[in-house]
Structure formats: structure tokens, C-alpha cells
Length: 271
Image (cartoon, rainbow, N blue to C red; front, side):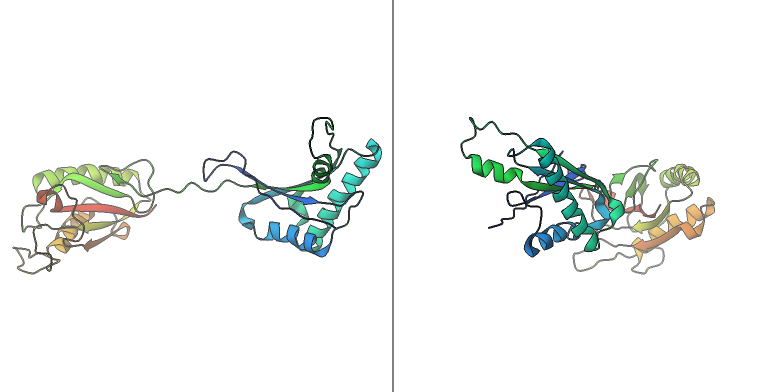
């Protein structure tokens, strides 16, 4: 009775983004190179259930046991590899990704060492289907920075240490303007960056998200702080199309002390 075995092996493992080979072995009866329907469908599913965007190439290698002459076994192993190739193509697998179809001939066994010789020989009557997979892209997590970097990703936060406000105020301090002057120069050098200006407040009760701006007497202090930075950067010739602004109230505390929550941050929205 024919039997079928699938196994997967990951080479160069240890990193999610490392290059990967995935192997399925199809086992044949003695002196045969035909497949039953169960075997055939399983080998097709092996490829079709793999992420097609990652499949770089398919290699097919045929083998035989050590019984018989070299020439005969080479032909048999080649026929086994060709059987698998034909099945894949007939099932819609693109021929161009199959880069190798090769009969390797027989696999020799030290029969005086192997304990279960019939089993060892049965495992050598096989075809290995090898999928060469492209690297998974490295997952980048947004970070927190105190200045503009040469390379950013969407979601990066730019926290400026001197971009802080007096209690209840949305007016820019001298220190804040000095830091924004430096920031504007960096933004002119990185013209593709787009960002949201996020305003924050401290020292309000938990049930009250927003604070009152003592100048306007309205409860929109974090929004006004963000708008102050927006207007100052626009004054420094940063195109308005690159910027948006929004108030976040007391919902994003830094945990460093109340004075650090009276702040404005930039968050990269497009690079």
C-alpha cells in the first residue's frame, strides 16, 4: 500500500524575516513513479496553501533506493521528479517558477549499520519539493525621538523637550520658539515628511478630558497649543499641506511629571 508523508523544515531559522526553504517529500512504492489522487492533491495543496507572494522558486528532486543499477535508478528518479512537475503544472502552478527538475538517482545505505533497512529504503524512494521563499519584510515599530531623523516610519513621535507650555496657556515660550526654529530647518531638509501636531494638557480631573485656555476661557487648551505650533511652523514657511493639528487633552500622559504633559508632539503621518 502506498504511503504519503509531508514534512516541513525551516532552514536558517531563528528570525521571522530570515530566508526560508520549505520542503515536502512524497514517497513512492518500489520501482514506481505514479501517484494516487491523495498524494497528487496533497502535493498541489502544499504549494497552493503557501503565500504565493513569497514563493521565489520551486525545485523538484527525485530519488530512489539503493537496489538496482545506477542508470536505471537515475531514469526512475527523473521520472518521479517529472511526475510531480506535470501534476503541479496541470493544477495551475506556473511553470516559470519551477526552476529545477532533477533526478538524483539512488541513495546509498550502509546496510551493516542501518537497523531497519526496509524502512530506510522506503524513505529514499521519494521526491523532494523545495519551495524557496522570499524574506519576510522586517516589522518596524514606530519610535519616540527628540529630533527629526534621516529615516522615519509612519507613527514615529517627535517629542521636543523644550516645546512645553505654562499652566493654562497656549502661548509659545521663548524656549519653545527657539526649538521650533531648529525643527523648521530640519523639516525644510526633509520635504516629504507629513505630520500631525498633537497638543496635550495636564492637571485636569479624570472625568474632564480637556483644560480651559485662560486666554480664550474655553475648554480647548490642547487644541490651541497644537494650533499655536501649526501657525508658527507655517510662519516659518512649512507648507500647511504637510501639517494637521489636533488636541488630545489629558489622554496621553508621559508619566514624567505634570510639567511634561503641557506639551506638543509631532507624529509622522506620511513619508
